[in-house]
Image (tube, rainbow, N blue to C red; front, side, top):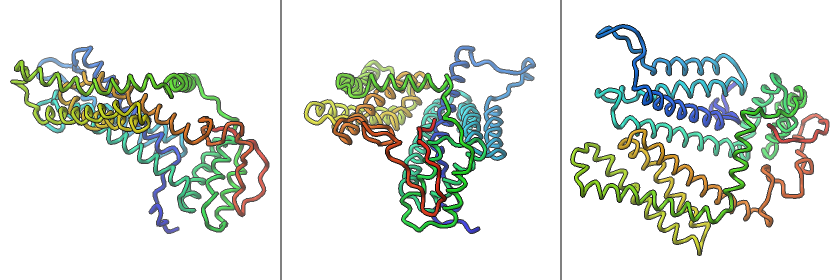
Length: 388
């Protein structure tokens, strides 16, 4: 069968962005845990022997083996479960691999200073890729070609053959046929019949390891979203964070502390990014009273300049002690993003409250049934529930 033009034989899975984020998170946690362990234990060498015969097995080797294991899992087994496990194992392996990038780009050994910045930029690029994939996946779901939607529905049907489909998963798969703008085909009818015929799985209850983070996120969102006082604190925190580095650099220059510094490119980059963040932060802070929505966008831009560019230079200069500053930036970004989402939700509905799936308050998913695709066999009425 010839490959279709819209995808050229490649199709993003519905869970692609989630698996990419899992890969990135596993890699970041692995790097931080590895560095913390090495710092606490004094950078030990594993292996036997004495003197010149002492053997050291680089953890880059273990990282490569784990990446191979994750790849083999995804190549040999099918379904979302194999992709999830492959992303987790591969992410841990990639973290162990990228942690020793300093040995590959210079001959000064493990403590090559720009290595931390290179690691940070690598994970920043992967995070951007995950964000891009998520946007493209949503676009394919809403306005993709008929072939793209059919292939995505077939992937869901394959999962249903193996594990069954919850009512919500079944309804979502059938919803992919809606709005293609093309007449129903025999393939559409066959896929709809297959999705209807696969076993029904009960709604999966998340385990404790998933329920606890979900409740924590829900609790935190309720405490953060819509709190103007927290936005003001975030605004001043963003301004202060950008100003601290500029003041510290000025003091270090006046006291001669920079006399033996060699990373002048990183210093110039960090100062430039901090100055840009400071200008945006001051502008956003002054806009809070007259235009809160624009102020939040400006403050988020100030944080993103620091996270996407400035932190790479800071990691080069301060090594992994820059993690604390990075965590502060992430916390500030979370507060501002929650506020922006709360304002968009308020603009979308007179009451500012909607279901996650878009149903207005007072309605239910059951009151908005999913239409059966053209050409599909009659289906038994089921009450759609949210997929776990």
